[in-house]
Length: 287
Ligand SMILES: Nc1ncnc2c1ncn2[C@@H]1O[C@H](COP(=O)(O)OP(=O)(O)OP(=O)(O)O)[C@@H](O)[C@H]1O
Ligand SMILES: [Mg+2]
Image (cartoon, rainbow, N blue to C red; front, side, top):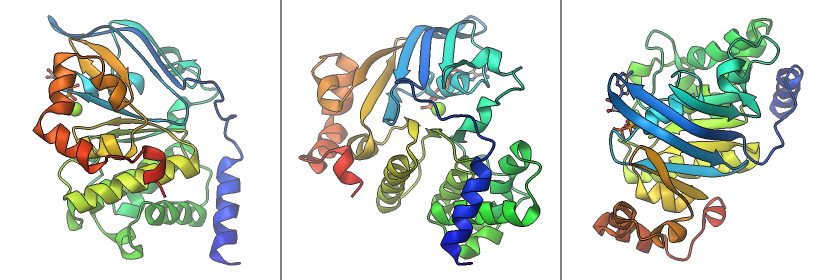
């Protein structure tokens, strides 16, 4: 059996028990979200809808609550008020639902990478597989993990390395491999290109776009990287004043005349990024 047949077999087997893919227009819907720590309100009546198949960039000043918003959507942060539906299900209620575990339908790359330091890259990718598919036999599980590591652009030899033996860029790719372990429909990326050199960051961007298009993912991508926003994001959501104050393409956002948005996209860095991507669009970047 050649490698391609094996991969197809693995994919088929891994898909056997999966629920139907979500076909609605908005796989993520946040309404009236309120988050508060002590007296400090982070989100106040925040609304956001993410479209199926898009890469939504999420921007906002440091501390505006981008990571907290992501944690709320994936059920790690219980909001004070509001409703969050992911793939048509109420996230708060889905926690107790044994029927279909929606946590297996998304992959997450956390801001710090969050790899298990005592496990190799391959073993890290096996963690979610063990958690959600304990019945998979060892050989198959390792083969799926290997495939995801290679898919994330790491070389074969990275599979047996520990996180401490990897560069920052390789760690991000290993985190991505783990996020892709379960063939998710949704991918959450928190600052995936932070700390990467510009070439490494651009490569990571291209990989994200390619995977999104080939795997039919919907991506929630928190970033401060203006190049990433221009190169691969279909729309951008801006967090400020405890809410999502605008969502749209970059030209649409600039047209809103909001002072923070104006400063962000038309400041010196914003202008350089715009010039660098003039005439391109996210779809073309994927080629
Ligand atoms: N578990 C927590 N307990 C108390 N406060 C918290 C907690 N998590 C986050 N915060 C606070 O909520 C605010 C928003 O944090 P968050 O991490 O979402 O910011 P961010 O927009 O992701 O910033 P950055 O761009 O720096 O990553 C911050 O003021 C932070 O200190
Ligand atoms: Mg953050």
